[in-house]
Length: 123
Image (cartoon, rainbow, N blue to C red; front, side, top):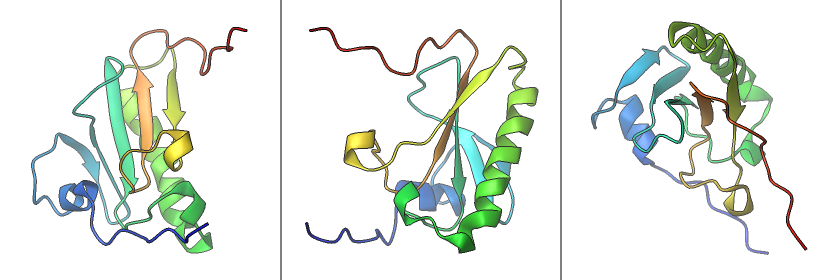
């Protein structure tokens, strides 16, 4: 199988640098959080490391601080958004995992009952 190449630039990289508009809810030296432009729930926030890491499969020990910050920012935003009844955190990885933008990102989804993660295949 051919080796996958790390992208040099993504649309998310431009959001981090504020080169394109986004509804940014949080930004610091490690992570940026902004509203998804195609929400799948009443609250749908993307939380990304500022440094480009293409997929969860590319994460190394050098990314631990940013990954930890992603979770603490998710908790803070969930509180701000009034998601006290619960929320889902989701990371898609590569093609079969449903990843569309190859810049690691965590989805924070909430605002309604989300149901099961996967449904059983019939047959």
